[in-house]
Structures are given as structure tokens and as C-alpha cells.
Image 1 (cartoon, helix red, strand yellow):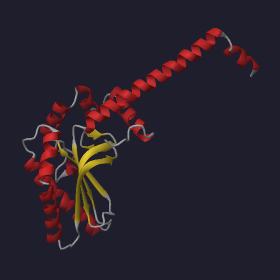
Image 2 (cartoon, helix red, strand yellow):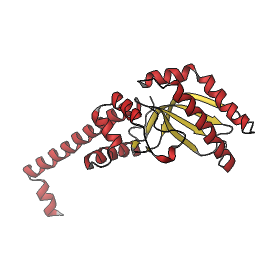
Image 3 (cartoon, one colour):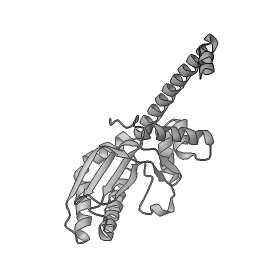
Image 4 (spheres, helix red, strand yellow):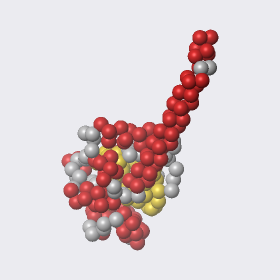
Length: 221
């Protein structure tokens, strides 16, 4: 211990320690700034759908998927010519009551009497994969649909660009949707969510997840 204390008292060693510490701080700040900016840009490029079932019963979960299918079908027709998220979210706002009515009609036609609550806002989402596209955890603008007591499992998707359809089991993301994402993101941001073969890209994605996990990138807009 005494020998160690003598070593760190050496002016050159002290300087190395100080410089190493400053380098660590600088690198951490740069990494945080990068992650914060990139995540913000990704969040601003998509509009998501969040459907909550009444409960986790088999029947309520099946009903949730019926509501999802009909809402996505309506959204895809509305936003077929949209080029930006701002266009899509404006259309959703203008047709908010119609979205609610479609959900209610779907529920009534299935023989249930649950009420529906619809909100357009900024909500927390976990990391989700859509085919070969992965969106990091964060706060995204979304259409949130609560069925009945909304105590069942969640279902997440991307309404704009349309990254999932009724048949999401295929895991295929349409090329048109990818093109819209490319137009709304930088080249690196698109690579970050679409390329899992590059080790450097994988590291950067993990960096986003790390800062989210420690609570540094979870502030709502």
C-alpha cells in the first residue's frame, strides 16, 4: 500500500491519472451527446401504435388483435401518400374520433361492450424489432388505444412508416417503408436501426440501450 501511494505521488503518474480521468469524462460526454441526438432523431421519424387489451384472457387478446388490424388498415389508407411523420400525425389528429369509432365498432361486432379510450401523445416504448428493423427503447409519439380496463398485454407497432401489417408474422418490412425511413433519417441513423451485421453499428445501438437503461435518455418531450 505504501509503495502504491509513493507511485501515485510521482508527478508524472499523477498527470497520467488526471489526463486519463479527463479523457474518460470527455469520452462519456461525447457518447451521451451522440446517443441523445441520434435517439431524438429516430423518435422524431416514426409514429407508433400502442394497443392495450382489456385483460390477458384469450378472448380479450384476440379482440385486441382485431382492433389492431382494423386500425392499421384504416391508417394505411389514410397515410398512403405521407412522406413525413408530421403529415401522418396531423392526419391522425384530424381523424382521432374515426379511429375511436373503428375500435368501438370492431368491439361491438365481436360481441363485446368495452369502452375505448384514445390518446395521441408521447409514450415510453421498449426496444422492439420489426423484421430487419430495430427501434431502440425511448419515448415516441403514438396513438394509444385502451380497450376496457386496459389491464392486458400491450401490443406495439409503427403506424408511420408502416413497418407492420396484419400479417406481422412474416417479419417482412416493405421496401417502400424503408425508403420513407431513409428520407427522414441520416444515413448513419438508418444503418443503426437496420444493420445488425456491422459490429460498430451493434456497439452504437447497445450504447443507446445502455443510456436508456441507466435512465439518462428517458425524459419525455
